Image (tube, rainbow, N blue to C red; front, top):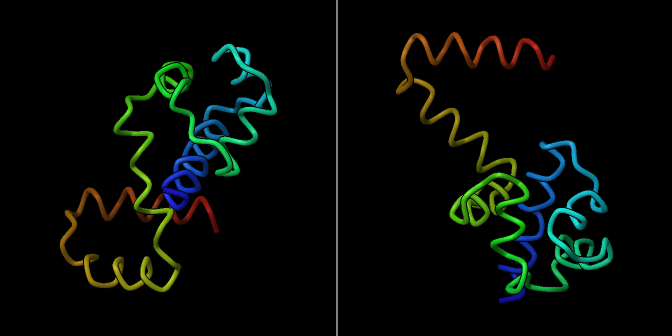
Length: 105
């Protein structure tokens, strides 16, 4: 359970930051205190009482909140996965990935 709390907290933080929200703004939308959001994101508290409200505030479904497989994998796993699957993508997907990577470098 502790691992799930930690991963869920990281996922909530990831989505919150992508939405450019502060912990205080998310807390206001959820109807709780900033400290509670902090404890959830740090994996100290499981947000059972606030789970639906957090999903609504972040404009995501519950399955999206629990989609944290990418957070569980280390960098070597991710690099290897990319190498093993790069030949499986379409030309259009290759172009999109190229432009994405190019914009980051």
